[in-house]
Every structure is written in C-alpha cells, then in structure tokens.
Image (cartoon, rainbow, N blue to C red; front, side, top):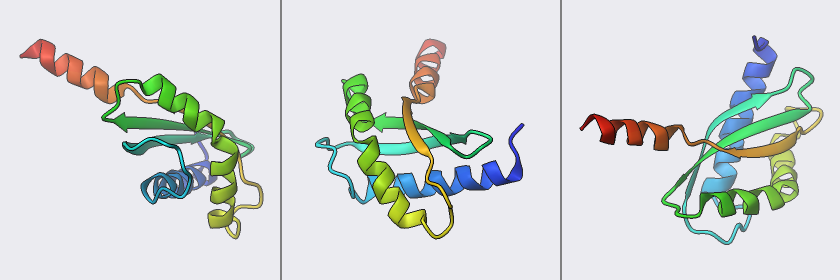
Length: 111
C-alpha cells in the first residue's frame, strides 16, 4: 500500500511528465500522442516508474526505447519544473501501458 506522500508525488510527476510530452519540451523525434497513464514511486521516492500510452503508433517498442534513451534529459527538465517541491528528483523508468490495446481487443472479440 502506498503512503499518502507517495501518492502525492506520483500525481505530481504524472502531471508534469505529461506536460513535458504534451508541450514537446524534449525532442523525441516522433509525432504522436503520448499520455502518462500511471506513475508509481518507490517508498524512498528514488525511483519513478511511468507507464505510457502511445497513439497512434505502429512501432511502440521503438518509441519507448527512444524515450528511455532520453530519460536523463526528461529528468533534467522535470527537475527544473518540480525542483522547489521535491528535494531529490527520482530516476525515471518508462514502460509501455498496453491496457488500452487489451481493452480494444476484448471489445472487438465481444462484437
């Protein structure tokens, strides 16, 4: 179970990372919609696992790899935004959230 502090930091990071992708503050070289569906923070607030949903993308794994390569730059921009609220900026790990694809597949099967 997450503590209240973890939940607050998770929501803050989800909002700010989403803004970074929306405003294209980091050049990823791709032109698609990236939304942050969930952020999970470790109990010591040192690691943040971000789950991303990509639309429309045929090669989602390649895009996630590109984002992972840019994680240091994303963390730097994030530090500029939330540096006053957090003492330490957590390490960022990005994962593909395929729950929407799974739900769409189930919906197609039910039709």
